[in-house]
Image 1 (cartoon, rainbow, N blue to C red):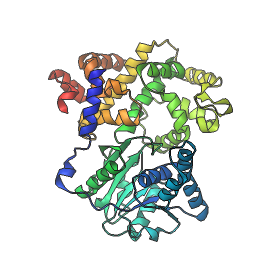
Image 2 (cartoon, rainbow, N blue to C red):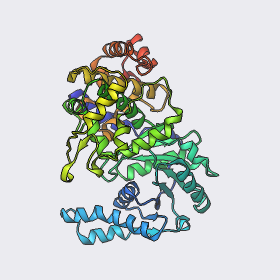
Image 3 (cartoon, one colour):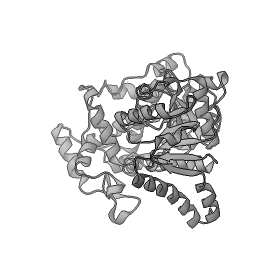
Image 4 (cartoon, one colour):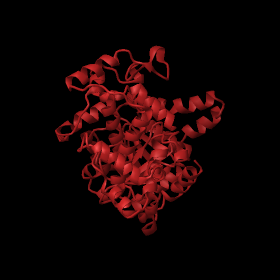
Length: 432
Protein backbone atom coordinates (compact mmCIF):
# COMPACT_ATOMS: atom_id res chain seq x y z
CA UNK A 1 0.00 0.00 0.00
CA UNK A 2 2.85 2.37 0.82
CA UNK A 3 4.42 1.71 -2.62
CA UNK A 4 1.07 2.36 -4.28
CA UNK A 5 0.54 5.65 -2.42
CA UNK A 6 4.08 6.89 -3.14
CA UNK A 7 3.65 6.05 -6.83
CA UNK A 8 0.28 7.86 -6.96
CA UNK A 9 1.88 10.96 -5.39
CA UNK A 10 4.68 11.19 -7.96
CA UNK A 11 2.44 10.15 -10.88
CA UNK A 12 0.20 13.14 -10.17
CA UNK A 13 3.24 15.45 -10.09
CA UNK A 14 4.48 14.27 -13.48
CA UNK A 15 1.14 14.32 -15.34
CA UNK A 16 1.47 18.06 -16.05
CA UNK A 17 4.94 17.64 -17.60
CA UNK A 18 4.15 17.72 -21.30
CA UNK A 19 6.31 18.40 -24.39
CA UNK A 20 4.08 21.32 -25.54
CA UNK A 21 4.66 23.28 -22.31
CA UNK A 22 8.42 23.22 -22.84
CA UNK A 23 7.97 24.63 -26.35
CA UNK A 24 5.34 27.35 -25.77
CA UNK A 25 3.77 29.58 -23.14
CA UNK A 26 0.00 29.52 -22.52
CA UNK A 27 -2.18 32.24 -24.06
CA UNK A 28 -3.94 34.91 -22.01
CA UNK A 29 -6.81 33.40 -20.02
CA UNK A 30 -8.94 35.97 -18.21
CA UNK A 31 -12.47 35.30 -19.49
CA UNK A 32 -14.35 32.15 -20.40
CA UNK A 33 -17.38 31.25 -22.49
CA UNK A 34 -19.42 28.07 -21.90
CA UNK A 35 -21.93 26.78 -24.46
CA UNK A 36 -24.60 24.66 -22.76
CA UNK A 37 -26.18 24.99 -19.33
CA UNK A 38 -26.92 21.33 -18.56
CA UNK A 39 -25.17 19.26 -15.89
CA UNK A 40 -21.73 19.49 -17.50
CA UNK A 41 -22.00 23.10 -18.69
CA UNK A 42 -23.18 24.27 -15.26
CA UNK A 43 -20.46 22.22 -13.54
CA UNK A 44 -17.71 23.71 -15.74
CA UNK A 45 -19.16 27.19 -15.09
CA UNK A 46 -19.01 26.60 -11.31
CA UNK A 47 -15.39 25.37 -11.54
CA UNK A 48 -14.49 28.54 -13.49
CA UNK A 49 -16.39 30.92 -11.18
CA UNK A 50 -14.77 29.29 -8.14
CA UNK A 51 -11.32 30.28 -9.41
CA UNK A 52 -12.38 33.83 -10.21
CA UNK A 53 -12.88 33.50 -13.98
CA UNK A 54 -15.83 35.50 -15.38
CA UNK A 55 -18.09 33.23 -17.46
CA UNK A 56 -20.56 33.97 -20.25
CA UNK A 57 -22.94 31.03 -20.69
CA UNK A 58 -24.77 30.54 -23.98
CA UNK A 59 -28.03 28.59 -24.35
CA UNK A 60 -30.51 28.35 -27.21
CA UNK A 61 -33.45 30.26 -25.66
CA UNK A 62 -34.47 32.30 -22.60
CA UNK A 63 -36.00 29.29 -20.87
CA UNK A 64 -32.81 27.20 -21.27
CA UNK A 65 -30.59 30.02 -20.02
CA UNK A 66 -32.82 30.41 -16.95
CA UNK A 67 -32.43 26.66 -16.35
CA UNK A 68 -28.66 26.93 -16.85
CA UNK A 69 -28.41 29.74 -14.30
CA UNK A 70 -30.57 27.73 -11.87
CA UNK A 71 -28.21 24.73 -12.30
CA UNK A 72 -25.26 26.94 -11.35
CA UNK A 73 -27.06 28.58 -8.41
CA UNK A 74 -28.17 25.18 -7.09
CA UNK A 75 -24.52 24.28 -6.35
CA UNK A 76 -24.00 27.49 -4.34
CA UNK A 77 -27.37 27.21 -2.58
CA UNK A 78 -26.25 23.79 -1.31
CA UNK A 79 -23.01 25.29 0.01
CA UNK A 80 -24.96 28.10 1.70
CA UNK A 81 -27.32 25.54 3.29
CA UNK A 82 -24.30 23.62 4.63
CA UNK A 83 -22.81 26.83 6.04
CA UNK A 84 -19.80 26.63 3.71
CA UNK A 85 -20.64 29.89 1.93
CA UNK A 86 -22.49 33.02 2.99
CA UNK A 87 -25.17 34.66 0.84
CA UNK A 88 -22.78 37.58 0.25
CA UNK A 89 -20.09 35.20 -1.00
CA UNK A 90 -22.62 33.54 -3.30
CA UNK A 91 -23.66 36.94 -4.67
CA UNK A 92 -20.00 37.89 -5.28
CA UNK A 93 -19.38 34.71 -7.25
CA UNK A 94 -22.62 35.01 -9.25
CA UNK A 95 -21.62 38.59 -10.20
CA UNK A 96 -18.99 36.97 -12.46
CA UNK A 97 -21.71 35.05 -14.33
CA UNK A 98 -23.58 36.26 -17.41
CA UNK A 99 -26.16 34.29 -19.40
CA UNK A 100 -27.05 34.94 -23.03
CA UNK A 101 -28.75 33.43 -26.08
CA UNK A 102 -26.56 35.39 -28.50
CA UNK A 103 -23.27 33.82 -29.61
CA UNK A 104 -21.92 37.33 -30.38
CA UNK A 105 -21.59 37.86 -26.62
CA UNK A 106 -18.57 35.52 -26.84
CA UNK A 107 -16.70 37.89 -29.18
CA UNK A 108 -14.18 38.97 -26.52
CA UNK A 109 -13.64 35.81 -24.39
CA UNK A 110 -10.21 34.14 -24.31
CA UNK A 111 -11.53 30.57 -24.37
CA UNK A 112 -14.85 28.86 -25.07
CA UNK A 113 -15.76 25.40 -23.76
CA UNK A 114 -18.60 23.65 -25.57
CA UNK A 115 -20.69 21.34 -23.39
CA UNK A 116 -23.71 20.45 -25.53
CA UNK A 117 -25.30 17.10 -26.35
CA UNK A 118 -22.82 14.30 -27.19
CA UNK A 119 -23.53 14.21 -30.94
CA UNK A 120 -21.06 15.09 -33.66
CA UNK A 121 -23.50 17.04 -35.87
CA UNK A 122 -24.65 19.18 -32.91
CA UNK A 123 -21.08 19.91 -31.83
CA UNK A 124 -19.92 20.77 -35.37
CA UNK A 125 -22.80 23.23 -35.68
CA UNK A 126 -21.70 24.96 -32.44
CA UNK A 127 -18.06 25.15 -33.57
CA UNK A 128 -19.05 26.63 -36.91
CA UNK A 129 -20.82 29.46 -35.02
CA UNK A 130 -17.92 29.91 -32.58
CA UNK A 131 -15.51 30.22 -35.51
CA UNK A 132 -17.57 33.12 -36.86
CA UNK A 133 -17.98 35.11 -33.64
CA UNK A 134 -14.92 34.59 -31.42
CA UNK A 135 -11.71 36.62 -31.67
CA UNK A 136 -8.97 35.10 -33.88
CA UNK A 137 -6.76 33.92 -30.99
CA UNK A 138 -9.56 32.46 -28.79
CA UNK A 139 -9.01 28.83 -27.77
CA UNK A 140 -11.99 26.62 -28.65
CA UNK A 141 -12.50 23.49 -26.55
CA UNK A 142 -14.99 20.63 -26.60
CA UNK A 143 -16.07 18.81 -23.47
CA UNK A 144 -16.60 15.47 -25.16
CA UNK A 145 -16.06 12.04 -23.67
CA UNK A 146 -15.85 10.00 -26.89
CA UNK A 147 -16.02 12.06 -30.08
CA UNK A 148 -13.00 12.52 -32.37
CA UNK A 149 -11.73 16.10 -31.83
CA UNK A 150 -10.36 16.30 -35.40
CA UNK A 151 -13.91 15.78 -36.72
CA UNK A 152 -15.10 18.63 -34.50
CA UNK A 153 -12.22 21.02 -35.28
CA UNK A 154 -12.63 20.57 -39.04
CA UNK A 155 -15.90 22.54 -38.78
CA UNK A 156 -13.74 25.64 -38.12
CA UNK A 157 -11.19 27.59 -40.15
CA UNK A 158 -8.69 27.23 -37.26
CA UNK A 159 -8.29 23.56 -36.30
CA UNK A 160 -4.92 24.40 -34.68
CA UNK A 161 -6.84 26.29 -31.95
CA UNK A 162 -9.17 23.46 -30.98
CA UNK A 163 -8.59 20.97 -28.13
CA UNK A 164 -10.68 18.55 -26.11
CA UNK A 165 -11.29 19.18 -22.41
CA UNK A 166 -12.95 16.09 -20.96
CA UNK A 167 -14.29 17.08 -17.53
CA UNK A 168 -15.74 14.48 -15.18
CA UNK A 169 -19.08 14.77 -13.45
CA UNK A 170 -19.76 16.29 -10.92
CA UNK A 171 -17.24 18.82 -12.27
CA UNK A 172 -16.94 20.84 -9.05
CA UNK A 173 -15.87 17.68 -7.17
CA UNK A 174 -14.02 15.41 -9.65
CA UNK A 175 -10.35 16.38 -9.98
CA UNK A 176 -9.46 14.77 -13.31
CA UNK A 177 -9.31 16.73 -16.56
CA UNK A 178 -8.31 14.85 -19.72
CA UNK A 179 -6.77 17.34 -22.14
CA UNK A 180 -7.19 15.84 -25.59
CA UNK A 181 -4.66 16.87 -28.20
CA UNK A 182 -5.76 16.45 -31.84
CA UNK A 183 -3.06 16.19 -34.51
CA UNK A 184 -3.17 19.84 -35.56
CA UNK A 185 -3.33 21.58 -32.13
CA UNK A 186 -0.81 24.39 -31.60
CA UNK A 187 1.59 24.03 -28.65
CA UNK A 188 0.42 27.24 -26.92
CA UNK A 189 -3.22 26.10 -27.22
CA UNK A 190 -2.38 22.83 -25.43
CA UNK A 191 -0.39 24.77 -22.82
CA UNK A 192 -3.45 27.00 -22.26
CA UNK A 193 -5.57 23.90 -21.53
CA UNK A 194 -3.04 22.89 -18.86
CA UNK A 195 -3.00 26.46 -17.48
CA UNK A 196 -6.80 26.30 -17.10
CA UNK A 197 -6.50 22.96 -15.27
CA UNK A 198 -3.94 24.43 -12.88
CA UNK A 199 -6.14 27.47 -12.21
CA UNK A 200 -9.17 25.23 -11.55
CA UNK A 201 -7.02 22.98 -9.29
CA UNK A 202 -7.69 20.00 -11.54
CA UNK A 203 -5.29 17.11 -12.15
CA UNK A 204 -4.59 17.29 -15.91
CA UNK A 205 -3.64 14.34 -18.11
CA UNK A 206 -2.59 14.72 -21.74
CA UNK A 207 -4.51 12.31 -23.97
CA UNK A 208 -4.14 11.52 -27.66
CA UNK A 209 -7.18 11.70 -29.91
CA UNK A 210 -8.42 8.09 -29.93
CA UNK A 211 -12.02 6.90 -29.40
CA UNK A 212 -12.78 7.35 -25.68
CA UNK A 213 -9.31 8.94 -25.15
CA UNK A 214 -7.55 7.26 -22.18
CA UNK A 215 -10.18 6.63 -19.50
CA UNK A 216 -13.33 5.77 -21.46
CA UNK A 217 -11.41 3.65 -23.93
CA UNK A 218 -10.07 1.49 -21.08
CA UNK A 219 -13.48 1.53 -19.33
CA UNK A 220 -15.05 0.23 -22.56
CA UNK A 221 -12.77 -2.81 -22.40
CA UNK A 222 -13.18 -3.79 -18.75
CA UNK A 223 -16.89 -2.95 -19.02
CA UNK A 224 -17.18 -5.47 -21.87
CA UNK A 225 -15.25 -8.01 -19.79
CA UNK A 226 -17.75 -7.54 -16.91
CA UNK A 227 -20.64 -8.02 -19.39
CA UNK A 228 -19.08 -11.29 -20.64
CA UNK A 229 -18.80 -12.57 -17.06
CA UNK A 230 -22.40 -11.53 -16.34
CA UNK A 231 -23.66 -13.48 -19.35
CA UNK A 232 -21.41 -16.43 -18.48
CA UNK A 233 -22.80 -16.83 -14.97
CA UNK A 234 -21.69 -14.10 -12.56
CA UNK A 235 -24.49 -11.83 -11.35
CA UNK A 236 -23.89 -8.05 -11.64
CA UNK A 237 -24.08 -7.96 -7.84
CA UNK A 238 -21.27 -10.54 -7.46
CA UNK A 239 -19.15 -8.52 -9.90
CA UNK A 240 -19.81 -5.27 -8.01
CA UNK A 241 -19.05 -6.94 -4.66
CA UNK A 242 -15.69 -8.17 -5.99
CA UNK A 243 -14.84 -4.66 -7.23
CA UNK A 244 -15.80 -3.15 -3.86
CA UNK A 245 -13.66 -5.77 -2.12
CA UNK A 246 -10.71 -4.70 -4.30
CA UNK A 247 -11.04 -1.17 -2.88
CA UNK A 248 -13.24 0.76 -5.34
CA UNK A 249 -15.84 3.09 -3.77
CA UNK A 250 -18.57 1.56 -5.98
CA UNK A 251 -19.03 -1.30 -8.43
CA UNK A 252 -19.23 -0.87 -12.20
CA UNK A 253 -22.98 -1.60 -12.44
CA UNK A 254 -23.81 0.84 -9.63
CA UNK A 255 -21.62 3.39 -11.48
CA UNK A 256 -23.48 2.79 -14.78
CA UNK A 257 -26.80 3.36 -12.98
CA UNK A 258 -25.49 6.57 -11.43
CA UNK A 259 -24.22 7.93 -14.78
CA UNK A 260 -27.41 6.98 -16.66
CA UNK A 261 -27.64 3.88 -18.86
CA UNK A 262 -29.11 5.83 -21.79
CA UNK A 263 -25.76 7.54 -22.51
CA UNK A 264 -23.95 4.25 -23.13
CA UNK A 265 -26.95 2.98 -25.09
CA UNK A 266 -26.82 6.01 -27.42
CA UNK A 267 -23.09 5.45 -27.96
CA UNK A 268 -23.59 1.75 -28.71
CA UNK A 269 -26.36 2.49 -31.20
CA UNK A 270 -24.19 5.11 -32.91
CA UNK A 271 -21.27 2.67 -33.14
CA UNK A 272 -23.36 -0.35 -34.24
CA UNK A 273 -22.36 0.00 -37.90
CA UNK A 274 -18.63 -0.03 -37.15
CA UNK A 275 -18.66 -3.03 -34.80
CA UNK A 276 -16.74 -6.13 -35.83
CA UNK A 277 -19.46 -8.81 -36.31
CA UNK A 278 -17.01 -11.51 -35.14
CA UNK A 279 -16.64 -9.77 -31.77
CA UNK A 280 -18.74 -10.94 -28.86
CA UNK A 281 -21.57 -8.54 -28.03
CA UNK A 282 -23.72 -8.78 -24.90
CA UNK A 283 -27.28 -7.44 -25.29
CA UNK A 284 -28.27 -7.31 -21.59
CA UNK A 285 -27.68 -3.56 -21.08
CA UNK A 286 -29.59 -2.76 -24.31
CA UNK A 287 -32.55 -4.87 -23.16
CA UNK A 288 -32.59 -3.00 -19.82
CA UNK A 289 -32.70 0.33 -21.70
CA UNK A 290 -35.49 -0.92 -24.00
CA UNK A 291 -37.61 -1.23 -20.83
CA UNK A 292 -37.01 2.46 -20.13
CA UNK A 293 -34.82 1.65 -17.12
CA UNK A 294 -31.93 4.13 -17.25
CA UNK A 295 -30.60 3.73 -13.70
CA UNK A 296 -31.04 6.02 -10.71
CA UNK A 297 -32.89 8.75 -12.60
CA UNK A 298 -35.72 6.36 -13.55
CA UNK A 299 -35.62 4.43 -10.26
CA UNK A 300 -34.50 1.21 -11.97
CA UNK A 301 -31.49 -0.08 -13.87
CA UNK A 302 -29.14 -2.91 -12.91
CA UNK A 303 -30.35 -2.07 -9.42
CA UNK A 304 -33.73 -1.00 -8.05
CA UNK A 305 -34.10 2.40 -6.33
CA UNK A 306 -37.42 2.34 -4.47
CA UNK A 307 -38.47 5.73 -3.00
CA UNK A 308 -35.44 7.41 -4.61
CA UNK A 309 -32.85 5.71 -2.36
CA UNK A 310 -29.25 6.48 -3.34
CA UNK A 311 -27.76 3.00 -3.04
CA UNK A 312 -29.77 0.46 -4.99
CA UNK A 313 -31.05 -2.97 -4.03
CA UNK A 314 -31.12 -5.97 -6.40
CA UNK A 315 -33.52 -5.54 -9.32
CA UNK A 316 -35.76 -8.65 -9.22
CA UNK A 317 -36.77 -8.26 -12.89
CA UNK A 318 -33.18 -8.35 -14.14
CA UNK A 319 -32.75 -12.09 -13.64
CA UNK A 320 -35.29 -12.86 -16.36
CA UNK A 321 -33.47 -10.66 -18.93
CA UNK A 322 -30.10 -12.26 -18.13
CA UNK A 323 -31.48 -15.80 -18.26
CA UNK A 324 -33.26 -15.19 -21.55
CA UNK A 325 -30.02 -13.81 -23.11
CA UNK A 326 -28.09 -16.84 -21.84
CA UNK A 327 -30.56 -19.24 -23.40
CA UNK A 328 -30.58 -17.25 -26.70
CA UNK A 329 -26.82 -17.74 -26.88
CA UNK A 330 -26.79 -21.35 -25.59
CA UNK A 331 -24.71 -20.40 -22.55
CA UNK A 332 -24.66 -22.73 -19.57
CA UNK A 333 -23.93 -20.47 -16.59
CA UNK A 334 -20.89 -21.25 -14.42
CA UNK A 335 -19.83 -20.03 -10.98
CA UNK A 336 -17.18 -17.31 -10.66
CA UNK A 337 -15.27 -16.80 -7.42
CA UNK A 338 -14.39 -13.26 -6.33
CA UNK A 339 -10.77 -13.96 -7.27
CA UNK A 340 -11.73 -15.16 -10.79
CA UNK A 341 -13.84 -12.05 -11.36
CA UNK A 342 -10.95 -9.76 -10.37
CA UNK A 343 -8.36 -11.70 -12.40
CA UNK A 344 -10.37 -11.15 -15.58
CA UNK A 345 -11.51 -7.61 -14.78
CA UNK A 346 -7.99 -6.39 -14.02
CA UNK A 347 -6.40 -8.28 -16.93
CA UNK A 348 -8.83 -6.64 -19.40
CA UNK A 349 -8.14 -3.20 -17.88
CA UNK A 350 -4.35 -3.57 -17.88
CA UNK A 351 -4.12 -5.14 -21.36
CA UNK A 352 -6.06 -2.23 -22.91
CA UNK A 353 -4.10 0.30 -20.83
CA UNK A 354 -0.87 -1.21 -22.21
CA UNK A 355 -2.17 -0.61 -25.77
CA UNK A 356 -3.06 2.99 -24.87
CA UNK A 357 0.58 3.55 -23.79
CA UNK A 358 1.97 1.60 -26.77
CA UNK A 359 -0.01 3.71 -29.26
CA UNK A 360 1.12 6.96 -27.61
CA UNK A 361 -2.43 7.90 -26.53
CA UNK A 362 -0.98 8.28 -23.02
CA UNK A 363 2.51 9.79 -22.75
CA UNK A 364 3.59 7.39 -19.97
CA UNK A 365 2.15 4.53 -17.89
CA UNK A 366 1.81 6.78 -14.82
CA UNK A 367 -0.61 9.01 -16.81
CA UNK A 368 -2.94 6.02 -17.20
CA UNK A 369 -2.68 5.47 -13.44
CA UNK A 370 -3.57 9.12 -12.72
CA UNK A 371 -6.57 8.92 -15.09
CA UNK A 372 -8.03 5.84 -13.41
CA UNK A 373 -7.26 7.05 -9.89
CA UNK A 374 -8.89 10.47 -10.31
CA UNK A 375 -11.64 9.75 -12.82
CA UNK A 376 -12.68 6.13 -12.33
CA UNK A 377 -12.35 5.37 -8.61
CA UNK A 378 -9.35 3.03 -8.82
CA UNK A 379 -8.15 2.57 -5.20
CA UNK A 380 -5.32 5.02 -4.57
CA UNK A 381 -3.38 2.71 -2.26
CA UNK A 382 -2.94 0.30 -5.19
CA UNK A 383 -1.23 3.04 -7.21
CA UNK A 384 -3.28 2.69 -10.41
CA UNK A 385 -3.75 -0.24 -12.82
CA UNK A 386 -0.23 -0.26 -14.30
CA UNK A 387 1.49 0.09 -10.93
CA UNK A 388 -0.79 -2.71 -9.71
CA UNK A 389 0.27 -4.80 -12.75
CA UNK A 390 3.95 -4.36 -11.85
CA UNK A 391 3.25 -5.48 -8.28
CA UNK A 392 1.04 -8.39 -9.42
CA UNK A 393 3.81 -9.53 -11.76
CA UNK A 394 3.74 -9.04 -15.54
CA UNK A 395 4.68 -12.66 -16.28
CA UNK A 396 1.77 -13.88 -14.17
CA UNK A 397 -0.53 -11.40 -15.92
CA UNK A 398 0.55 -12.51 -19.41
CA UNK A 399 -0.10 -16.10 -18.35
CA UNK A 400 -3.64 -15.12 -17.25
CA UNK A 401 -4.35 -13.38 -20.56
CA UNK A 402 -3.07 -16.34 -22.60
CA UNK A 403 -5.32 -18.64 -20.57
CA UNK A 404 -8.38 -16.44 -21.27
CA UNK A 405 -7.37 -16.13 -24.94
CA UNK A 406 -8.24 -19.80 -25.47
CA UNK A 407 -11.95 -19.04 -24.97
CA UNK A 408 -12.09 -15.72 -26.88
CA UNK A 409 -9.04 -14.92 -29.04
CA UNK A 410 -10.56 -11.68 -30.41
CA UNK A 411 -11.25 -10.07 -27.03
CA UNK A 412 -8.13 -11.38 -25.27
CA UNK A 413 -5.47 -10.28 -27.74
CA UNK A 414 -2.24 -9.80 -25.78
CA UNK A 415 -0.87 -6.24 -25.94
CA UNK A 416 2.47 -6.14 -27.82
CA UNK A 417 3.82 -3.83 -25.09
CA UNK A 418 3.10 -6.40 -22.35
CA UNK A 419 4.80 -9.07 -24.43
CA UNK A 420 7.86 -6.81 -24.93
CA UNK A 421 8.14 -5.86 -21.26
CA UNK A 422 8.11 -9.51 -20.17
CA UNK A 423 10.63 -10.49 -22.86
CA UNK A 424 13.01 -7.69 -21.85
CA UNK A 425 12.41 -8.29 -18.13
CA UNK A 426 11.13 -4.71 -17.65
CA UNK A 427 8.17 -3.14 -15.83
CA UNK A 428 5.68 -0.40 -16.71
CA UNK A 429 7.49 1.76 -14.19
CA UNK A 430 10.66 1.53 -16.30
CA UNK A 431 8.79 3.54 -18.98
CA UNK A 432 7.93 6.41 -16.62
